Length: 342
Image: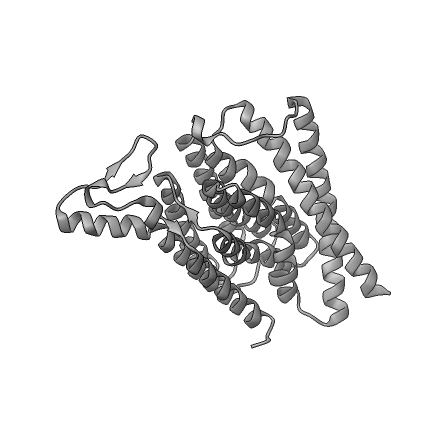
């Protein structure tokens, strides 16, 4: 009976986390549209923060209740899940076209941030590490908004036909759903781990990480079906930055978090591979340009092209299905290792 009740708490918690974050995204996205914020900025900030709310609230609550491994499993584990599972699945469903150079720049910033994260977390995360990660995240947040303030006609996406007051109400209700859901989810997961004799680390990096990554999965899969690759990439990068810069950073300010070097390595590996896949077209075009001694060109939309060497960004600047499959395979191997199956 005990484990049944705990599983029910976990399921209800997941439901509230997902529906709450969904309502938060709908409301906050509508509010952002009133201020003419572009799709990529919405994806990298508003939607990313909204879909990261489960990780942020869950991590803080977990570390507050004395479960630091669930906290880092939620934040760092969700980063791994977002790239390996969510991005992998999206690329398998439809190749993700990288249209704007600003997205590549953001991915490079994220890679540098991940390297710093790995260095800071080598001996665990303390209050100083958390402060550094949080300040760097605020810098990224400001940079993203500054570089993508305007909206263009071809970037328009459909918004819910709701008024601004209703959008505010939906945002608040969504936030409350996330708060309640995180408590039920963490408490239920801890009880399941205790009853089954599973460590908090395994629960955090698998069940909790996957459960809190469901909002990112839903948003990204919906976006890829509409061929909005910018939203997918912006959501993944922005969500992971929020997971580290808010969820993990704030958690480590509350309590010391022990080192998890294997998971840090897997996270850095996936980030490096993702950025490599995104940047391969620029590298390829740059090499060809140097060979022919002709410079790269940029179009008016900041798209990365190379007309001088006849290379189309649609052909090279994307994450294709094979690359998506490789990300998914790495994620599945990681899960098998973490759960001690292999």
